[in-house]
Image 1 (spheres, rainbow, N blue to C red):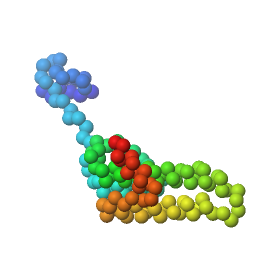
Image 2: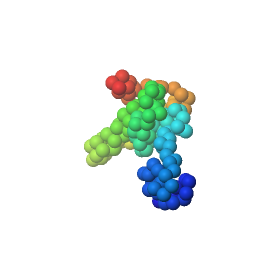
Image 3: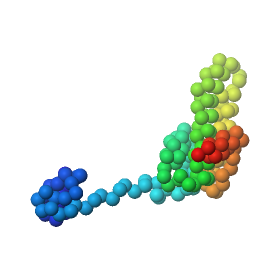
Image 4: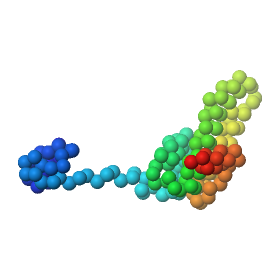
Length: 146
């Protein structure tokens, strides 16, 4: 429980004035945007982290800081679509090809997706909005619909 800034009596956190002395209590500043210290480059790179990049993508797309940054939003959308491809590979292609001997398509697709993720992390580190085939087209379409 906070105390009055003038007389020291206990006050409620929502009190504007002290009940004892009537002094106006300081108003807490609104919480700062937690993304003010995150650079656009760092946000773009985080969107391609395999397995966890989708969290960064959602945060970037929801953050007020990046609402007007088209490049960062492009990376976030493309990272989401790349993550969707990971899910499809693991949940659909993996079980579908598990019973087929000597047919490593699931592993090959997984390796290709990993290479694409690393490639895009390097491109994002160089502040390039490289458009992957299919994923980039979907990301551009998502950007234009906003």
